[in-house]
Length: 585
Image (cartoon, rainbow, N blue to C red; front, side, top):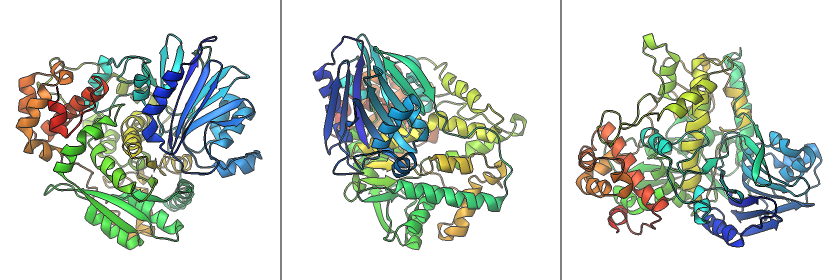
């Protein structure tokens, strides 16, 4: 896991060393173990390194003849790529095989990669820069077109820090953020900055994009005909292979453990594959009655022989660190799960540089309650996912948001094509937008804030091939999702209590806000980023009513936006706790 950035300019334009240095400095937290640059003609590459594999000879840029590569993430099948393709690699880096594959296969080089990656390749012979992103969008990559050409970076804030463009907000994306808690598609909330889409590879020549390709994350087609026993055997093999690959590391690793089925499956497989106890980290909360998974996680850890580290996330600590937590989310996702994820990463960094996590389990195996609703016809109570926004009916915003569902609606059409069932369509919709633009953005930014690499074994081509085209009845049964994964756990790790009703992971943000509602409401209402979109008196009333579930959710969105706007639009450093940061003038 690293940070990458660079410039691909019009012919005859020389890259600015100051611009490159500014981007590199802005990405320093992603790669504190070293940095490198490559400048050739009108192309410049910059890299900050978090050393995970090949600690001695894996510095970047990597060179093969005149071609240069920088990468962020991990190519897990790098050993197999070397052997199967007889590649003459001179380092042990996982990113060197893609360099040789490009020299052999050209722009289609990424088709054979298995991992999480954002890669930039400069090919001076073809006079082009090639950018590629992994199919699930686990690793981020952003581009900005400007007068001299195109700039790219692992985070939008690096493009802003380099002065390539000003932080102007896209009004349509802001509506999405407020109503959905994330933004969809290629467009980001910053005008002029777009995401490279998951699985996309582009070629840039003479400062403009000249070719695009896309690699799908999920297999095509409707459900296969397969029995439960065969499906269980196939799942076991796919999980074992994926977790084994995701454990490849030259530095210590652990995992994030909740009380649910996803992380329990990762724990069970890690325990099978490791000779020493797995190191598992769990977070809980200081609010009575809050959904706290530490007890269930502790039971699972004990049964697996794992070493279990539990942390307590308190209201005082949240208010102290929330400006920094939100500040890490330059591509905003107002998911309150950023809070425990940030604290878990901070604790994990004391002992490891890599953690495995269960992101993707619900999407791949059919776990969310909204999937079961989507399976039913409307006359049987079926509902469209995300049909309502966070601020619907609250009379808080100055104007009622319109068009905020357009991106989701367009993605729904594409996700449901190709003979997929309603369930598959709902899963594919989440894989297209919710997963990369919320869950994986959260994981990337919160872990990278502490220079920790996050790995997601469920988001693997082998696992997707084994699970996505299962019959609906092997995903959802008796109104319970992830049926096959639960059956696998029942057989291989029964101590995880796999058929215990899904508790759902919630952060007691409403209770925390309610404790300081009057004070926070006044501060949030006075923020420029909030005052221009919301009615001050209704904002304060909303925060006073934050004990209610809907009110808490909306209040959290406004608190997040107030802090995010101060940091990433107004450019404030936000020193101190949440109250001091919001009161600063």
